[in-house]
Amino acid sequence: MGVLLTRVRFLRLDGSVPAAQRFSRVQAFANDPSVDVMLLTTGVGGLGLNLSSADVVIFVDHDWNPMRDLQAMDRAHRIGQTRVVNVYRLVARGTLEEEIMSLQAFKRDVAHAVVGADGVAAAAVQG
Picture 1 (cartoon, one colour):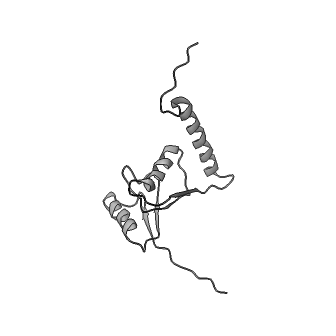
Picture 2 (cartoon, helix red, strand yellow):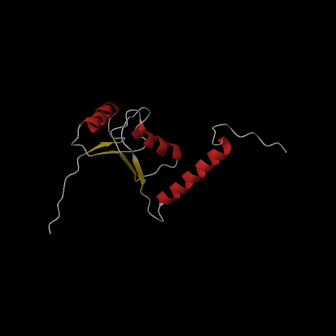
Picture 3 (cartoon, rainbow, N blue to C red):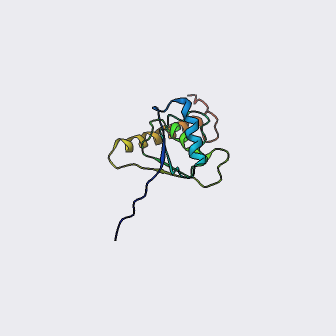
């Protein structure tokens, strides 16, 4: 039995792409059905990047700051998204990525303890 290989057409959006070309790449991803994948770094998007044409987000490189990963996920959940978005985090046991994920959990726990689930800062304890 033979193996069927198909080509995956992708666009890349990282620090090497000039800012003036970034919007056109996002537009091409959104409007060209032949483009299968958009590869990007979490830091390159900036505010307002809309990837609502995406329905899968896969993290292979996690940021020390959990908010940057959350912002990256939010880019696929912008206004105009009509599909369910699945998010996958690829983490190999015993790697730096595993340590980063542990640190992210710690930072989220500290933030929730300080700010609280309702978004209000916890009152100072007087002794």
